[in-house]
Image 1 (cartoon, rainbow, N blue to C red):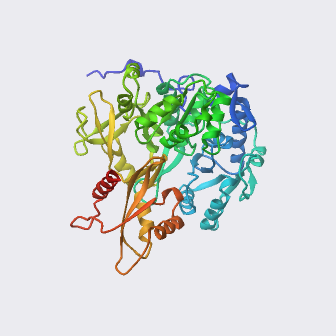
Image 2: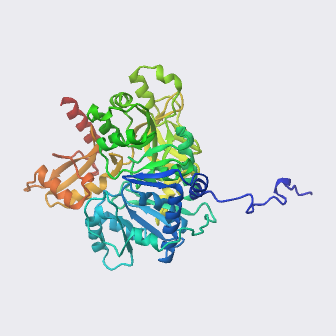
Image 3: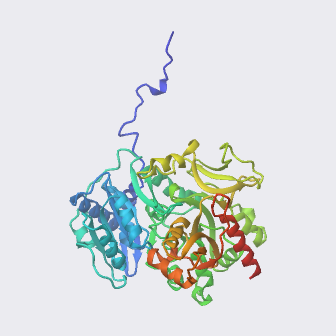
Length: 548
């Protein structure tokens, strides 16, 4: 019996000439070589070229190595959208270490948990957050964490909490440092924490391959031109800025950094630098279209905007069109590197009435260019639901733009990947064109201003109040933030507590954006086993809103 031999496997092996690990770090090297004098970063009066940016990233990498950072280590950053944050997306993984971008809105307890769980070796922090970082370090107690202060002229007053400054750290580094791409593109590049449905967040681990592909997918799916001028209205800490730090290196674009969201500053920068692209949650666009019309005077070009979160209502689409903003709706999660599905537009939609365009653009859409698939599966059979716009299933992703898994949490990882798909927990339908439309969330996560809030975490804080017998937190629609937490509370007999008391109590235990905006007192609906029926609370809230 002759053994069949595949001729395409004989002597045709991977080698240094025909195989290189995919990593978005390679984009920086290429752009710095081809466009060394093009402006990479604008921040206040700073104009930094791609050659200078490359040299600073190399300095950061070599300096971190001198401080003992290497493969498998974690470097955390607590930074707004400033140049150092952009540089960290390259300099940190150049060492083989993993970048952990911390949510700048978190409280000390949450930050202490993440720094401990992620075993951070170095923390880069902006002096704007000195107070919360000092409280975080107090909670950590004795530690070996190297804390580095990032300072700039546009930062508000704040004390130093570290042992050296960012510029002093870079001065220790080598601008010619020779670094290497990862031997395995499956190596971790970033760690991002997501609140999920429990108080303790899960650490999402992403890899070089996925970051490379989604950075390129941003370009392809959004038709981004070379040398795009991009305004940083989306926090870089959120899913690594949806991979756009790496995207901008790929297309040799210009990053216009913005410390704080302010409509006047946004329109000023758009006009001054001819901004072509920006991203953000619905609240960003709401702020822009609600700003005084005078701020838009002199704006003569179209700005392309990605919008994620709740489907953009008619008012937002109409307002953006009037403001010269062409929005595209995307969908994703931290586990899929940010946007991994897009409501791909069709030219003929432009001729449709506004409300019909809003309906079409409000869908979660189809797979991103380099994501293998996104679909809606029956929760029991894991078979695709029919494209009838009625049959509800769970949105699931599959492809190279999916996380490695959850750090130190094998059970959660296995559950997330059950049946060979990543399960989002979002319930949706597919319409006749195959586009996905979210109908509800199986996870009780509140998305407020683009940030995830765990209802369980808020409930846990409420339960710590001596007057609270039962508590349930659900999402309440909000014109500004999209959604905000609303708490339904059942008070213990012989106890008295006001809405103001509970809100003040929550502020002591939660980050401000997680604090309920409203407290509703009364007996909570429960099943025969005592489980609170949240769907009835949502219906109650909708009924109350309809009456108002």
